[in-house]
Length: 298
Image (cartoon, rainbow, N blue to C red):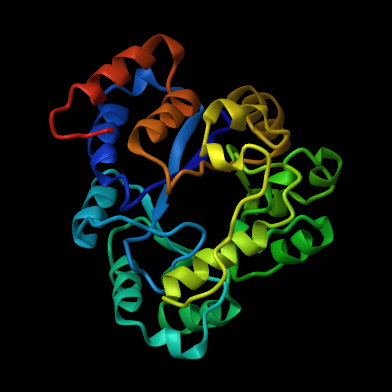
């Protein structure tokens, strides 16, 4: 059976949610689709200089986070996709300590999602035990540029811009090994016609560096409404479970990223229910998590 591997958001940000969800996923495996597994959980603690994509807000102690991942045999990924890093930023103690901790923790390899080639060369040299993922913050919408990225041996996976998700004639031109490296972003809510995606990510990078600059103001239709999963489902780039099973998996694509680090636990739960949980057991999973007294979803 061909399997889909989900890369889930909130390694630090939603630690308490995964504390409850992962035991359910192990103990009641029949409640969940047998064609999917958890490939990794990604994220970053608050105030990480190398952070990008979204501003991290996780406060959980890193050793506790990695102990949970190790217990369930799940790869941990640091989201270090800041696109504006300079040489002086590479010595940051907090980020280096996190990389060192991930490199030596557990039998399952851990990784880093990144944008900066400067950081890439540094990590290859300093932490060769970590695998590397090319970030969607590069906004790779040109297929030729994406193809070049896939050819780079440094990357285990490459996350293209969500607007390429349905370019099936181009995806079918890839070799089997290239297809194994593609990691599709499934549930993006950003306007399909957005031209400011890079500017948005750069604003987050500046914020993580503590630098002042022009705040990015989203001008997209509905941009002021926040994330709505119902609206994401209407996005032309949305990838649902039927498409994963019936279109992408048969073509040899198996890696699927779920976004949501900047959202709330209740919405992350909805993603876990939709993408991983059989409909007849969604109520049971929801009840088990909502009724856990240690977890505040709202």
